[in-house]
Image 1 (cartoon, helix red, strand yellow):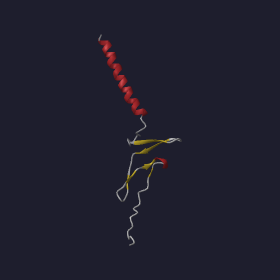
Image 2 (cartoon, rainbow, N blue to C red):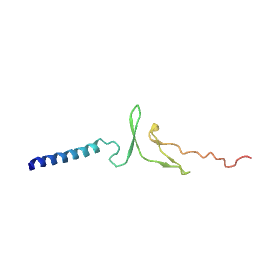
Image 3 (cartoon, rainbow, N blue to C red):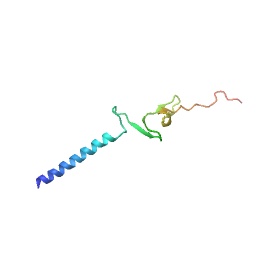
Image 4 (cartoon, one colour):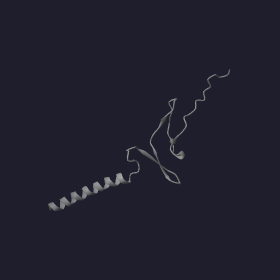
Length: 86
């Protein structure tokens, strides 16, 4: 009777360890440095970009363009006229 419970507990432990191991092996959302990545799928290939943002000089925040090899979008240009004509 005791052997039966021991085998059940052992089976559950093995199942948990295998599940956790499979998660870390098959999870592409991290790399060896621990950096978090986002997945972008295109018709040609799957691209992984770092989850980073860029703060522009005017305070706006831009993200990466997944269609341009993870390059950041351009910062917006201030179109306010410095000397408006009257």
